[in-house]
Image (tube, rainbow, N blue to C red; front, side):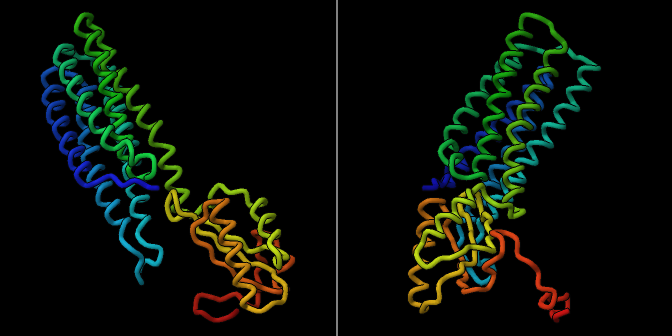
Length: 306
């Protein structure tokens, strides 16, 4: 069962991130720490992503209608893609700034850096707890959760840096921490970007199609399966369409086959919506996925046969 993150939780996380951002900007300026300022901008991006994630979840819960017969679930996928892309942009920005700091090192006030980082870690820890449950079931919430989690990790890195810089002057440590955090952010964001693009491009979900064909052909009255299409509305809902070659039988008996097919696909493969076309001989020799094009029945751009 998918668990929604409530609006109150989104609001609480947003306020916490805004608070962290303000504290870290002030602390970064006073201490001279690039890692702290970078984390502040990261938190600012988090606040925007959390707001975007909340509205996407709200939109995604709207029912199907004439304009959106599959509903609005893709809103959350678009939000997850946007949030993850923003993480990549932030990571690139941090690395560029860190390279500049390597070339022109500055003195860092380790005490201020340490104090502010501890405050940031505590706030990010609370935010992560508020979002954790929903991150298991939603790419959108997961992307937002990863924003907060990456902030918590960067706070840990800044704390370590702050402790060291309090006692030892190591000019390269602050930009080195920044690069490390940036690489981690990119590492966590890339899988979400790949998965959301696969969904938006209607790539086939990871199913055992040979096993599906075998199971369906075990149903009494089904002789062959062809013209299979499978895609995902979001990370949970698989849509499936197929043609079945059946025995010559009344429609009332075909409906019984339909019920068995839908039950098999739902119970064994987690497919939530199935469209079935029953045929007798037509397409019987076709492959599971390959559908030969009938040249005489191809429709041109004007809606006319060639």
